[in-house]
Image 1 (cartoon, rainbow, N blue to C red):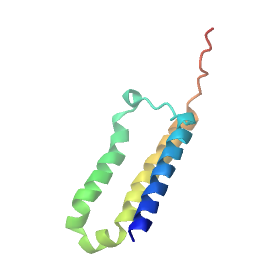
Image 2 (image 1 turned 180 degrees about the vertical axis):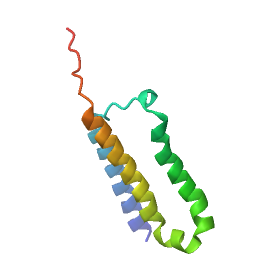
Image 3 (image 1 turned 120 degrees about the horizontal axis):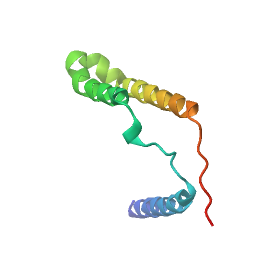
Image 4 (image 1 turned 120 degrees about the vertical axis):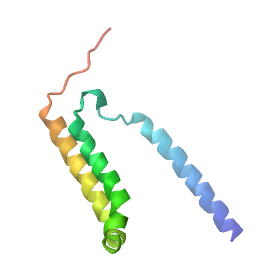
Amino acid sequence: MRDRRRRSATRAAALSLALSFASTQAEAAPLDGAHLSLWWAFAFLGLLASIGLGPLIAERLWHRHYGKIAFLWAAGLSLALGCASATKPRSRPSRTR
């Protein structure tokens, strides 16, 4: 049993190390939060309200479907951000020598 845990820990550490080296090439899309309007906060506030009030208002529904509810909030925000970034023209990085 102890050997199995040690092998699992070693594999997890090796996987973490490999992923950390692989992620050095990744770069997040530029999203400047200062230029987002207040409307973008509603998805976050809706998620917080769902988490806070969902169990109080509809306990049985919430406990059966909380993952789906959170997914719907996240999918809605992702869709909105994707549409907003698709309509913006992309700026090319300046090349200085």
